[in-house]
Length: 80
Image 1 (cartoon, helix red, strand yellow):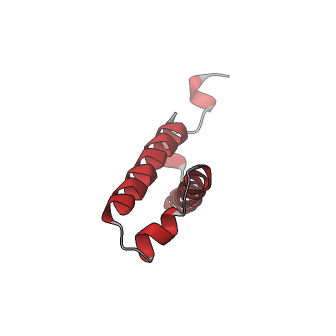
Image 2 (cartoon, helix red, strand yellow):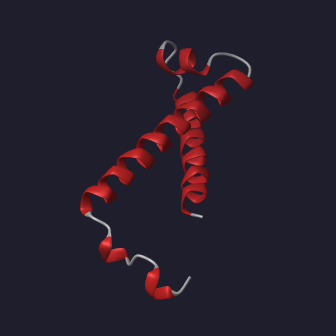
């Protein structure tokens, strides 16, 4: 296959790009939520209850760090 027979980037429509953006965005959000829930299940205690019922700021910082870490891994996996 020659280089001339491959589609150029300009040949893709904006709607195609928006559909891919939505699909990858929703997939990334869903996987980040699954990663957070998995972390919550694998650690002792209930992280969700610690954050929302007991207002534990340290648990909220930990949960945010987990979500950021999972999101970074997902972004690297989707790009490469």
